[in-house]
Image (cartoon, rainbow, N blue to C red):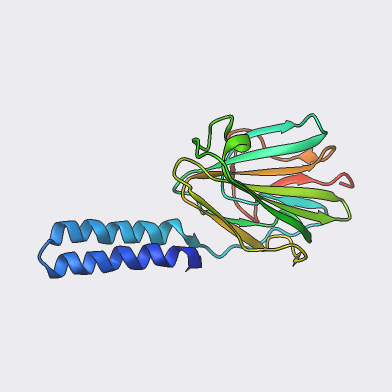
Length: 204
């Protein structure tokens, strides 16, 4: 199991502090700092997975628990997922396609499960297009998640399951997709990035 690059500064600093504290005699506090370093290593983990294969699948872009499945007024289907601090926090492309836009929106840091968070919180919207339509993965910051990081840019060509970004600490991820698809998840379901099938396309 590897660790995403954004995690290394947190891990290194925690362990450096632990070493210094132990060296000067503050052993108990040093052990706490080392434990924090281990937590950072756990939080920023990038476990090996086998991407789910199949024609016409829309995969989960993240790990977490489904908060809501609904249809917007504009006809798009939306699946919202809450990521706790214990979930893997990197995101993957739900479909194969081309990145059309990566848009950063500044905002608040409400709790990720607040019903206003997907509108008012800081977020990055990654728009992906293919022959079946337009898909938008929204990385949404939370009360602990103070930074969303996109690893892709406009023009990038993605395969389904490719890594596209990471959110630091507890957060939310939304997937917007064209309506009419057969949804395969419901509120309360645990989902795994690149593994769980969110939906089947209209052709299935």
